[in-house]
Length: 315
Image 1 (cartoon, rainbow, N blue to C red):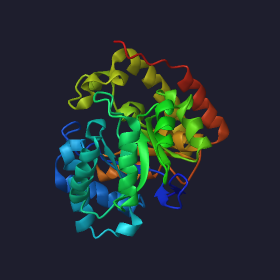
Image 2: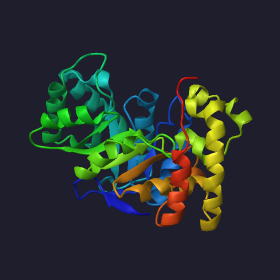
Image 3: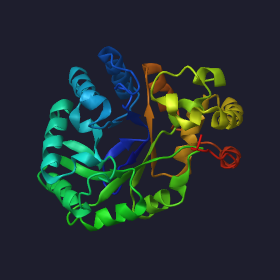
Image 4: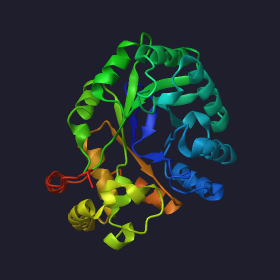
């Protein structure tokens, strides 16, 4: 496994993070034994950076992680656990209540990285009110570092001005070969400020793996039922890109998914893809996306073709 550091800290994190949204109703993986086998494989291949959220499975994801790590006798000091607090939990009182419950579910004494999942845009909680409360939790020792997920750069900058003792160490945004708005502002901002950029949906919820035909996408029974990337108008274009990636993958003896993830880590040394997995085999495949690099020519070949694709969300 390849490693980097979290933001401006000296904390070592694996270059591939294990995403655990799948332990939920949304993705349908609610069998603990499978979840445990996935986490076990992640540890086995050297993945030490685990991403979850308080609302994944209404706490089920955190519960599975906490239970599995305990049963696997994982060393806490070797792990970096990131969880996310949703915008509606950001009143001063709820922040402490939510973190206490998260700690119990994860069976840990502290959270390594706490990210705000999205801004409290439905409740109008003032930015400095919740950011200062989050900073207080850091000072009190229950959270080590803070991050922001799905924040526009302008609001991220505003949030940082509210902090006096700590800074934002990670931004989490949607970024993959065909959904690339993060290139415009988020990536340059993170690079300038020495932040880790955690790329969620790095495989386009599976659309970029090439595993599905057009007919297959019509049978998807999880949250991808209404995913625009799988709509025929978009997916036909994606399949053409997948053929380009597949040809490159053959030259490296890698899978399509591994090349897609490697394209991301090659893009910038601050990018850490959050790769979900529904089986130990997928964890192993994701881990094989690092410790090597695409050539400049192959990276550019994929980049050029991907840039020609325009995804529409109006369907």
